[in-house]
Amino acid sequence: MSSGSATFAYRAAHRSGRMEAGTLRADSADAARDLLAARGLFPVEVRMERGASPAGARISVPDLALGLRVLSTLLESGLPLARALAAMDDLVPAAWKPALPPLRDAVKQGSTLAAAMSAAPVAFPPLVLGLVQAGEAGTGLAAAVERAAELMEHSAETRRAVRGALAYPLLLAGAGSASVVLLVGFVLPRFATILQTLGQEMPRSARLVLGIAQAARAGAIPGVFTLLALILLWRMWTSTPAGLGRWHAFLLGVPMIGGVRRAGAVGRFCAALAALLESGVPLAPALMHAARATGDEALASRILAAREQVVAGHSIAAALDRADASTPTAVRLIRTGEESGRLASMLSHASRIESARAEERVRGAVRVLEPLMILAFGGVVALVAAALLQAVYSVRPT
Image (cartoon, rainbow, N blue to C red; front, side):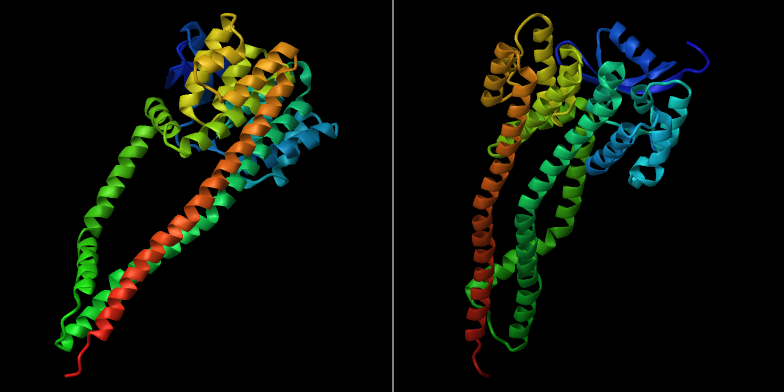
């Protein structure tokens, strides 16, 4: 190992699809990948560790899409790569700023953009790195960056649609919870104090509601600390590849949530795989990069296991079906694409169908959830209001 070696953090897949994370020392990111390959691992993400610098900081999907769009536009205008990176300074969001100087320096020293992005102090998704690498290998860097921008824009648009659909239920939940806390935690206890001052006894219904409120207030602080401890333990568990994979596998099995997650993840996988294949990336590495685009560790592991079957000569559709790594609709479209020689086109169709299905399932869940929440919070508020009214009418003049 040369004196210029550095420490690289990596995430790699075993042949079984199991993920492994760790660190190793190498002269470069490419050398680190070679070391992992020599150990029989498939590198998914390799990134230089930079001490206390913002290594591994992630750019939000909308900011990433905007920056890639700016870069593709500058490259299409005819600017050389180094000058395009220099011109990005005043055109991209602040999240890009830590990455631009290292990218420019590396490119000026002869590095490829993909290698420079892999070692940058900002974490670029493996999908973007794969597309850029394919573009530099011969399909055209500007077109590859534009395709990456389109994928990131589509991902950002899907997330905005889902968040928009969930905005009203979350607002309703917040307003309903605040109303219940106000009535049960403040109004009813104060009214009880007034009745006691007047020497009046509260009706049974009001005493029942007040008792529940007092019990809730007594257990509030221990409950908050318990909840915070559970959240901390959950975050520690899901910060490991194995823990995150088990958590995602659990979510896939939850009714309604699992269907939405699977449809969305399969849509992202199909879109990524289509883009990689259209950019000229060979099937085996394309499957590996596209697996990371799912955003779901459980499905990604299954796709990587299916990849081994594909490398062994099985069809993509059959391998994904056996690994339970897709949806029936996507499998049928992929099979059609393989048989007709239009795999990338069918993958794009599958992506649009599954993304639309995920959004529709979210909207359907919201349509069911909204009236249920209104009934639940309305029922609680009505119960407390009835108890208060009964207490008011029970007051006898003294």
